[in-house]
Length: 507
Ligand SMILES: Nc1ncnc2c1ncn2[C@@H]1O[C@H](COP(=O)(O)OP(=O)(O)OP(=O)(O)O)[C@@H](O)[C@H]1O
Image 1 (spheres, rainbow, N blue to C red):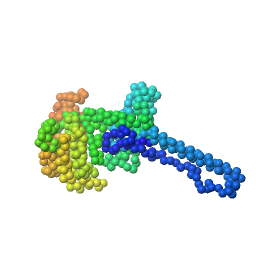
Image 2 (tube, helix red, strand yellow):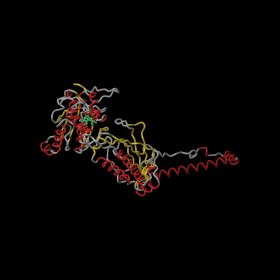
Image 3 (tube, rainbow, N blue to C red):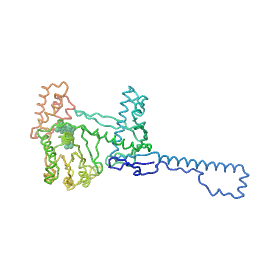
Image 4 (cartoon, rainbow, N blue to C red):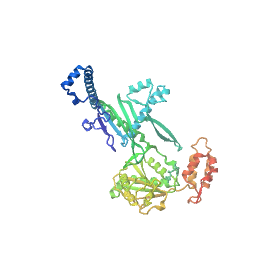
């Protein structure tokens, strides 16, 4: 059987010439030796023996049976060999290991086929069968699908893929898609039948994500081998379409960046309510930087800019960077410096290979200052050192712009060497809520966009809230924006003020 294996970490390419494809025997088809198929030395009778056998009807019947056994054994071997030969000549196999980038694209593609099939069934007015299974489409819809070329996976072993859809008010909805689970399945693609084997390795798993290694193997007739590149191209295009108008969050996967979950709907900048002027300062600085590539190149200055957002937890640092990236149509490469297994070399390497149009977000930057004794309950040690972090930030200058955002809850722990210009060009404090900020968040939650809101009443309550929250200098009753948001989600406007006191921490 011809085996096409995708080289890991590469975009899926199928060699055009068959010479580039290694030919191996199918591991599952070892030949079977049948008893009686090998001649023995006992087959040399003496004259005495032959006379006894000739005279004895039992012996001659045994010899006859043995002869038949030998012939049958030979036949069976011949059939096996012919089967293997036919398999090798007629079938072609494509392996997609889970560490390859095409793997999630392919599963997405399968899920999309299943969804499309379901839509067809509903359209055909046969929703009762559609709602129960993607594995047994009704006859009418099956005919329509066959006519259209693709029919979904024929399977009774399904796996669920759960994704979350975020609504504009911040709530999330879980969406379930059924995809082929581990096992063997069949589907039809552009009039060719393809066998799909999804195999999970119970012993090997990805140490980073804890997900077991998997391989999807597609097998079809040799003459249909050209469908594989087409199928992968379709899967890739589908993945690209999913990203349009969305922010892709990449995380480190071993030594490379991989999308983390599905692309997220861009977060509106207005949904992150910061104290007056902060968001505008950062955004205008970044926009100015992005337009000055030539200016940097002319002066031989590395084209990079570093930002530091510091402040207490839940003040909107990460959310603001997400919104900013969405606004500029950039993606995010997210890395937490206290992450297990992250070393200086790995950090340096990762910062050197960020996907284009992406903002690097280094969270918890103070983790590199903990003198490497950060030992968790399970005894792991993170090993990014302070000098390793500086090296990685200075990195090799590339033609592409490099935008790095760093966040920390402990500005006081940072070494001045880290925050010097060139490494950090703009710092902003995102603090607990100030009165005006709390007021804006309140109005955003309960104000004019909400059905039946009594605007005058909301404005009165918002002003009252502003009087309850600490002052513009960060003194008095402190509450984080995240805590306020959580509180507003749980309470009606008036009630939320009555119960606000529980939230405050004095300082
Ligand atoms: N200024 C804000 N405006 C609107 N929502 C906010 C704001 N700050 C926090 N939130 C909400 O609180 C949650 C946590 O915010 P986020 O993770 O951005 O905070 P953070 O400052 O990055 O926290 P940490 O320092 O712990 O990483 C999010 O759901 C976010 O929507």
